[in-house]
Image (cartoon, rainbow over all chains, first blue to last red; front, side):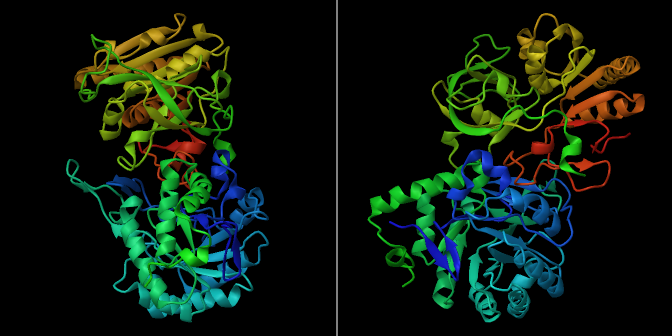
Length: 303
Length: 290
């Protein structure tokens, strides 16, 4: 079957994207597969100025998952555009810029700059990072703030689709999803990491210098599926699902609960060719399951 | 700091990801020379793991000593989650050899591998040590930090120019020193108490001062406190010194940003996996007393 999917003007040759923060600036993974085979590449979260991130240690292994408190270390939007974007095959695979700022005006300025770059296909607004003190998940936990940020980005994004990435660290994710939709979001992405911590009884210390970090990996897939199901029932926007996706089967689970596309995150760390392998495995699995179109399959479990 | 100012030595070839087959796993220093029937080695045991190269994996000329690989047995599924980084001990005649010590659940599980098991391997990764054939080169290894120097010495065009000073706590028989070329002079020093450790640090300083005085090259690999001591002495004596760092990593390819270390010029933290693991001693801040 034709794997292509269109989300609010964002055309993907297949529904497998890579998740921000787990695929570097894309070029790091070029030795392990053909980037143009992917549905899309979401690059490491970008702020206006470079950021050094949090102190070490800032990653910890947990059962079937990992905690991170990287704190959005990145080279800044300008250096990304000058040094990394030209190395990506953006004419053949959509490159999506994930952006982060501490206040609404900075979000808008960043959005205008990145949306103005020819090689950027869409913007993903990070209102859900749990590892930064200012902004971060706070925007994503308050529906009114989420709507404000979304509107500010949408107003400056021109014709480029705006994806709003939601946090699971809320009582009702559908309230924030509706607010983002009211703010003008074209696409929703969910979920970002779950807030968590890990403890070392021998040192009697937290395993992360930041104490609290974001949990990702196969351990969180059930939460991601639940959130996508809830939001797909509540909001009429295309959804990109993420959380614990490590196989073609996982991709189809997310599509059954209402996702249009997915992002592969922590599994890129388990082996660097994961996203390429998932993309390659999809056609055979769809064939085995007798699926002939995304429309018949998508959201079948939504009820 | 621009990424290319820290280059220790350029990578010899592009990394690849392949599933390799275990051809042999041997416990060093043990009488049987075989893995125990249960497969579980006692804590801190040392092992030599041989993986048969498959098509497309870089061979003898495709790596630089000091580079590393990420290993993840296929049987792990999602537990443990991460692959583990290991220095390349040897990569020759169709075999990738890893020398490792059991330190946690990942390496303990690796000590249970059997012939024929499949292991996902990606590499060669990172930037290795410089090689200056005509320069007197001092190799400073602490414990399992010996691993990259076996490959370094075997690949060195003038092994007679290299000298290994090796500090260790377990018995010397645990370490495969027989894999080193005969031309390399080896001095080993065992530390089992604080007095012996203090004596070792004194010996370390004398050697570092000696190589600094004659413009020699010093390369070091070992536990973090060992590297801190070497760095501190190297800076004191202005010795040309490279350090191989062993930080915790999830991906090994520069994506997770979990292995970063501080530089001395206050730029963004640098990635040990891709901008290291080998750095010039004056470029990184290891937090030791300078």
